[in-house]
Length: 167
Image 1 (cartoon, rainbow, N blue to C red):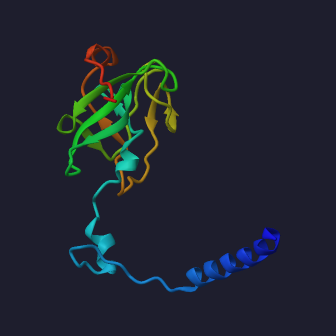
Image 2 (image 1 turned 120 degrees about the horizontal axis):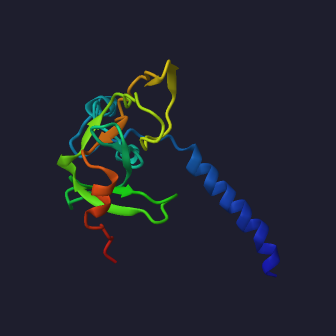
Image 3 (image 1 turned 30 degrees about the vertical axis):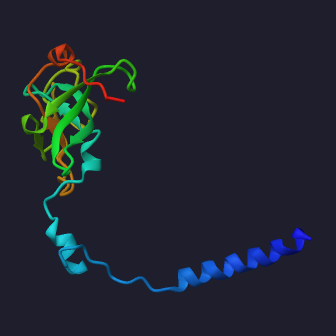
């Protein structure tokens, strides 16, 4: 007897779904009553937090010292600290350190790489001229910086207290 109701239930759910898709969406505005057309321009120059995670962190000698693993915010959403992963392979054996957000400098231009192999820099597109390599110029993104700067060596970061997420 319940087998008879399965096709009827299926047909009813298809009809309800088609009605939901046929409705036209209405324009939404946020609580400050901004018009939808002005919302995108009001955030011009702001960065996407999702793009900050994963950025490489370099020191003043253009040596890669780690990458941003996480952003720590207060309850108001203000970024308070940057969690940097140092060392390890694919996250295994990685040492995490939390650095106050104001101590990190973000740079839009690509790293000026003019060194030899073994300076711990991440691979990037380079043009080789003679014995020096220079980074290929790329257009900076308006939604995220190219990399971050924190003046410390890998060893200095590894010597800092390890950041652990509380359970």
